Image (cartoon, rainbow, N blue to C red; front, side, top):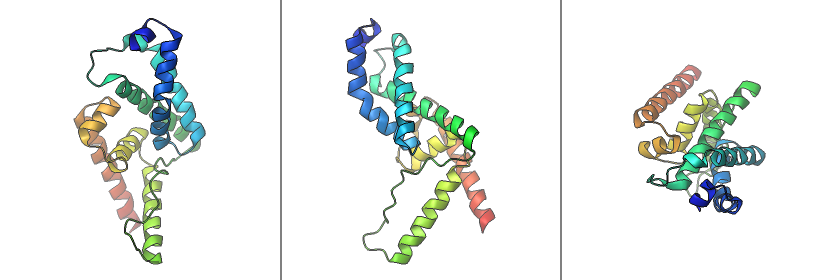
Length: 178
């Protein structure tokens, strides 16, 4: 299939698109809260992937889905940067589950939990797009450092640095509120 795409066969490109479209859309939706934006990111992902398909190395251990994921994450970060420039602060954790963590919480616990989640989501909007992505992958998707580095195409040290900086910023913001 990839060889056919590299050769420029439209049916191979279509197979790649149809086989990965839904997964890429769900990944994009994790970064932005609107399905319309996720659809734009999905389209950008496949446009960039098909433009660069000739550079894809079949011998890579991670394979085509991981390569597409990496392109999608970069497109989502670019989208968040543009949106942040246009609209100011953004929150990318809107998809965070709103269900209470325990089985039978009191209404007061539910209200407190929602308030805390809302404050964290708002605070995360002040992080850089890259820090938002790293924070989301670590604390929402619960990926380990190595997985985050692979998905973003950067070193593990870079991921740790972004996690440290984002935690420091958030800590400083919450301490300033107290």
